[in-house]
Length: 341
Image (cartoon, rainbow, N blue to C red; front, side, top):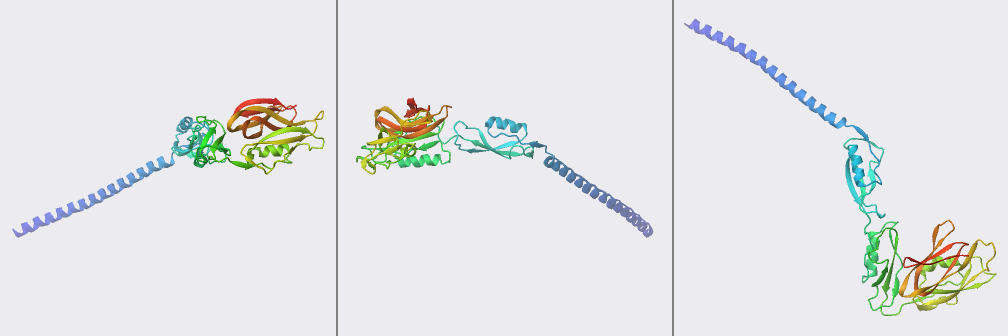
């Protein structure tokens, strides 16, 4: 009986040991299979990743600077590039929505799906002249200088013209151009400002001995109306001479000051000619912007004088080439013209 039991347990032990060895061999196979599968999975993921990241097609960045934003977006889309838009004020009228700059620059070779930064114009700070009457001149000047702070500002503020008025000193009484004027080009903004109830005075500028060109180069600084008469003098310099006996005298703003322009007698065949452009203007309630342009025989225009005048008798000396057309503008509109002969 004991021998039978002993044989039975021996057989069971042998069978268990065989199953255990089989199980150990199968476990190693499973572990190796799992490990191999994991390695293959990682390799596949890496392959897909590098295919996406490194395999993107390289494209040429198009030149979209100066084009409308719509056209620029279409060109970038065709190249499979994505835009990043930045807005910026511009100094040029009419370029709102235009691409001012791009990064990367045109011609660069980049991968598809790259972002291209576009700097797009949001237009000029203001599109038209506002109504500034009744406001303080200093506040308006500060606001406009802040808006148009670039070197090529579209709005230039001319020296203010002061007028006696019941309004508090520094109050804008009138402006030119008028409110609502569209800013399509460079504008010179002129203000008429109250000086208070007291009559403002100024000194007659030192103009005695100046040539015609010297006088015209400073005419916008003068706060008087100079009434010229002409005298021919063979000893006068070729550029003419201004003669005035009232330099330094204190007068009210834009008072009329007599002066003489001495020029040489006209010689036959002379290429240049000197004289006085004389015209009668309406009497204005305040000094208004006046400009004299010179147009040569080729049609080229140049500014000869730009200043403020109270109206009535207006005399402007000139020294130009013979045949030049002189054009007088008052309040921005052509008022008169003549040919220097």
